[in-house]
Length: 406
Image (cartoon, rainbow, N blue to C red; front, side, top):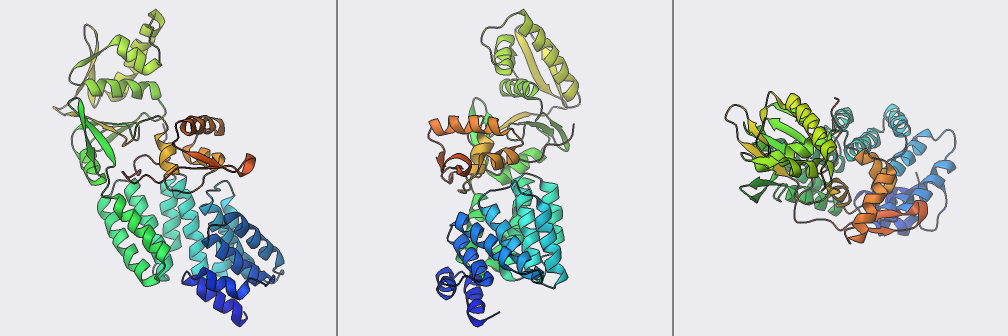
């Protein structure tokens, strides 16, 4: 490595992008192209950065496997920043193995952290935790240690474990201060601020109260029967019934819980569950069938009794019934939560993260765009979707998570 490349690499390591570019801007050899690609990525020019990194990777010879692996890792990080989540993880895993075999442990760790963050964005929390364990960030450089602690904090937040999340964020702040990278320090501060924002709403006596993540965790750990509209589940202590794949049953549960201890009329239940205002005999028969299915699912947690005008939900064991709703209204809450990170997402990446079809995501984006809540940049395959960061609340409960098996 010549002196200019070494100086440019040192400049990039401390966030001095312009200083790095001054040293290699007029060079077109593979190491210089790689440095320029990383620098352009730090400036937000992801398309150009990806092209430079690919040119650099092609330029390295067959005996330069280490340099090519580093380019693969850098390109994977650019893809993550672009929210291009459709690539195969095997290429990144192979690059990590090559780096580890050649004793480049810092870049190998970077590759594994990128893999963990990708899994986190896709809602595959268990796989992300396993990938973070494989990264083994002990004795890591400060910047990588901060990134690892940020991943650990987000995993804890998505599982509503606020105490481990706070501890991880404290460690991330210390590591980021040691690294002296302004963007990293700002990311840690933003993650810490999210803990103090409203995370959900609890419906109480016809009104509502906002709850922070810590209060949400306390409510879910209590003995109350909680109908959780953020994750589409029913919870009572350690018992959990998922209705994420059964929208009709969840609509019934939500309507009954909102009215508890009162009852809900059959016409209202039909409208909530089946989306029709004009009920007929077929709808009423279907309602009886769905109520029977709901009774079977929740028999250990609650009773569903018929009344003169409809049905009533009553929790067993003198429990209270609580309704937890997202901090924002609308069927596209998870979509808005993903876009709230300020990054530009493609429809294919959003579909992967939400576990929905691309066409469903496109329709939802069209509705949000008409309401002025998102905007598109680019055209055709280069089109990306953005929304302004939402500073009023945290979106931790709205972000997608892998659905449990039925």
